[in-house]
Image (cartoon, rainbow, N blue to C red):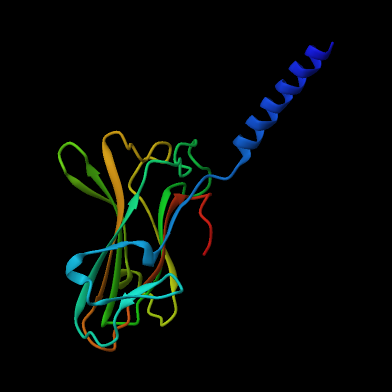
Length: 191
């Protein structure tokens, strides 16, 4: 009798665990902007802020800073789940960025590199000049990635990363990047 109770208890625990796992929200890849790898050539022109953002130093009048963020394969990132429902199911590239006008620009790209050949492909791109958002505050921008929703990332054959460029062409320009995120449409958190 005691053994049977244990078997029932174990069966219920397994069923409960499977139910919780099926209901848990998808994982989301998110990085603060100041955690990226800055190109060595740009080390003297960028500024990291304690708010998690990155920008170009105010004394610099004309510069471009390149930053890369690795997406590692040690999480499901919610991308192995069935396709999401809704009017626009997709894997999204999201960024909280600042573009203060014609003298500033922020471009964020989700990139894929073939491990064997080194061939690169851009899967999604956010360009602050194309979005038309001009603000001294950080603004959320997003773009659907050109990947299948049900299995967008194949870490066996590809490596993935986000590449960001902050550019300014005059001292008055003040481009900034605060957060970068890659997630399924329904799993995306507002920031």
